[in-house]
Amino acid sequence: MAPTEISSPLRSPPLAGCAGGARRARSSSPSSSRSASFNIHRLPAEATLAESPELPEDILMCVFGVLEIPDFVRAGSVCTSWHSAYITLRNLGKHKQSQTPCLLYTSESAGDNVACLYSLVEKRVYRLTLPEPPIRSRFLIGSSLGFLVTVDDISEIHLVNPITGEQIALPSVTTMPHVKPICDDSGAVHKYEYSKNYAKRASSTWICSLCELRESFYFKAFVFYDASTGSFIVALIHEPFSQLSFARVGDDKWTRLPPHCGYQDCTYKDGLLYAVTIRGEIHAFDLSGSAVTMEIIRGMDVYLDLDAVSIVQAPWGGLLLVSRSLEFEDPDDENTDPEIPLPKYTGEIKLHKVDVGTMRLVEIDCLPDHVLFLGHNHALCLSAKEYPALKGNHAYFTDDDAYITGRKSCCRDIGVLDLGSNSKEDLVSPHLWSNWPAPVWITLNLAMMKLALHK
Image 1 (spheres, rainbow, N blue to C red):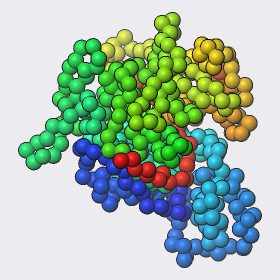
Image 2: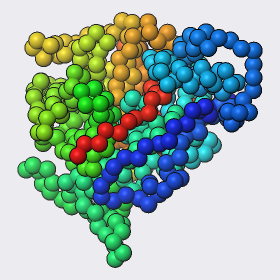
Image 3: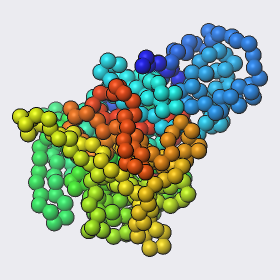
Image 4: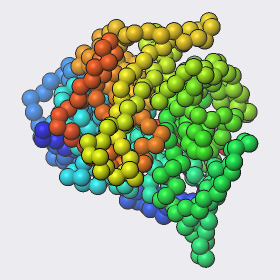
């Protein structure tokens, strides 16, 4: 499958975020904030664009308005009039909004700065050149609203839009209560002190290198848009004990949410941040006031035995809990090294509706005409009628394991599962991706994030 290079006809300057604590020097350098190169045919200077037989701009815009983003971007590179229609449509926000998710992954042969997109619509691969630091050196801990949530080699978090190249630094990890910077004689941060104390649990402290912290501190992150304030919220599940913190883009520190543990997934609905634990508890956080308030929507279920759980907004307005059972691959060789982690694979997916009145879980056996996307992305439930390239009553899944960093060399858990029969099939064969960083689903977005600074 020959990949295609894409280059964005319109490049907007990336926006810089505000961050406190330790920050790498290269994060503020010109090279670290360059726009991505999203290449299919690299766009020449506008003055040298070829001419072609003219079509009225309104007709071009009607055609462009139904295209998936890779084709939309390529169309804008053809000639001057098409480029003009592309710019107009994009500036008006009238391009197709309901984009089909793609699988974003890296490949050693593609290069350290290159991400690959597998299109479920076209069943083809596109390549995107991303800004520094190299995408293959980062951890991918989330994907929402067209942004990747990445962790660099000093354990700091950035949002990256792979289409526009916009890159935003989030508050430093040293603004969290569990992490303190250790400086060398010159005053530069060269290690972290990571304290694992939590409530009444036993406490321990670990001195680690800048790169080591990310191996055990981060689990999963989400980006949500808060319409009431026009700001973007990043929710982060992290250690110790899978706690939850948040920051608005532009904040200079992370805010830890009321102390609970075991969080597995989040979603944002009607101004509330919903979080679910591994025991099926659902907590709703109101982040709008000066003080965060929390309501326990559903208590712990001691009878639930879950390996992984997602909380998903349903198109009809309700909430779904989607649980996955994970199975270890049986080693073929009796002499298998016990120190090498065994890969985990999705065995079964179960569905529960959250009953609005009682907040009990009601098991359902299928999702007719709907599709799930599960993994380290913000979990999605989409209408198969609106996305004809997708299979109804199926789940498209990638890895979603809190201990995935311990299995970097293992084959990834990626595929398509029939929710009716729990039978699985490969997404594509042979596999295209490197095992690390782990691939994620992403819904492409051409919009630029506007910083809303809260002082």
